[in-house]
Figure 1 (cartoon, each protein chain N blue to C red):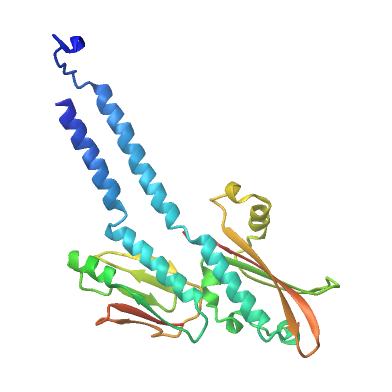
Figure 2: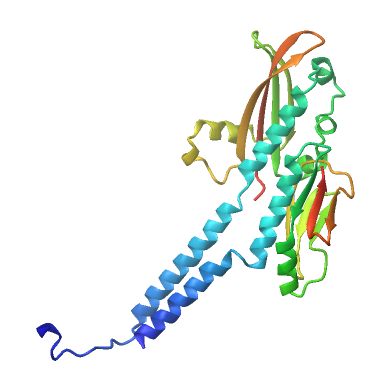
Length: 165
Length: 114
């Protein structure tokens, strides 16, 4: 109690330093909140996964290697994709690699959109936490397809990427 | 004076943090992405209904009576607008037939026929 005797409240001057500290705190909070919401709005990985799912399922369901191998095979028509978006916008990429199971013999490569193979290969080498945010977000999906006409199995490897922010 | 200014400053910060996620432009951005991802997710032949009553209430608060959700079938783009201006747009990659996305105004729902 003795400590409080003869003590008076003191009011410091509002110095320029105090306003500077408020400005730093305010700017940090605003930047933090905006960064948080921009990360939440980043759906590139989900989009890449959806594209991989779509391509993988439409190729493996009722797989017909002769049809896919043909020169007039149209992946966009087969998988209900809009070709214009892949050709004109810099948002998507896909690479479908079909190989014979067991022998690893290259069957066919189907490409679409931007060529982001290098960026995707680089991302696949990195751990999740080390991924480059400026690069397109990529995903890879391998599945097995059975051609009932030839009784042969194939590995369908799909790599997709999205860079729509 | 020092205390009062501190209280005012931190109140403004609290209000900012609490309200920024619910501003019209964030909601426009969120729904344009949600709708585009829904279109890309479902297999052909699927019909999906999405509740957009939140969009109606925001548009009403902004006195906006135009199209809340529009689809550009040529450029594969979803446009969500809650006020006059450009709104927020997001591309989808699935090929949709014109008229595949419609709004049930009574139920305040978006109907997507993938």
